[in-house]
Length: 284
Ligand code: PRT
Ligand code: ZN
Figure 1 (cartoon, protein in one colour):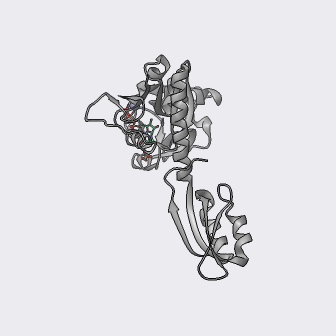
Figure 2 (cartoon, protein in one colour):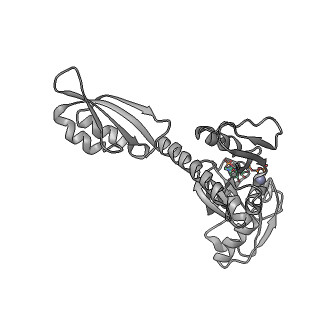
Figure 3 (tube, helix red, strand yellow):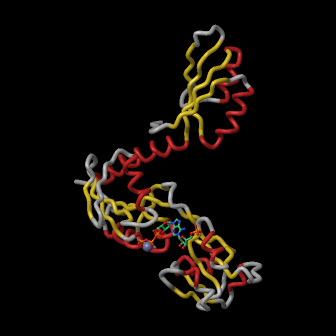
């Protein structure tokens, strides 16, 4: 029994998907143009596919799980379950119009022609706002559609926004915020479900490690209580006496989100010699 996972063969999600598996301790060899591979130290078989096909493969049970963007997962409308947000491949599906357009609100789109590779999500957005417009489905180079007279607006993926600028467009509505997700077939047996739980346990440890840093610092004994309140740690901070009387070394874990704020407060509380170290895995 092995867990069958479908990942993108090449493209924006490929490397991060392999890296995630590697970070989870799963060694994957994917030679050039290989469509299938077997992991070395985890019962896992990998299928390398076009991202658009992954939801179908997972729905049909050919693959038990898969990694795709939420944009693809929702557009394809397959019977699959999203079980984990993976934090990479972040982008948004947006409406954009020519920079010169006098766009005030979504009513602008009434009766307009919108080019997109996401006809389902685009139609859903228009329906929600009770807008009648013409959707023109194209499979690539959507951004040039307005400049060649093919459409009045587009509905496409945006990350930095530079492609829109290059093509004389401006982003006016965000339809969906997207990132890579792990999807799962809805009718799996106990053995596959157990393997998925093992994989999720490892993914959670990798993600928790990324969100946190290990921090070591020295502080005078009279500041310890204030420092403990700033650094609660996983259970509570470790305190070791320094050779110099009246001083201690404190070890703890600090969340990335409050990092700079806490560092400033720690310095104010008398902390010195602060070292911050990345964490590889974090089991909570
Ligand atoms: O061959 P295959 O079908 O597997 O790949 P693909 O060409 O369909 O997809 P690919 O590799 O381009 O993208 C895979 C997934 O990456 C997408 O489904 C999204 O979930 C995610 N992703 C993240 C993006 C982007 N960022 C992104 N910027 N996908 C596409 N883009 C494109 C966008 O379409 C536009 O052309 O990048 C351009 C805009 O980028 P900025 O930075 O200029 O705004
Ligand atoms: Zn694709």
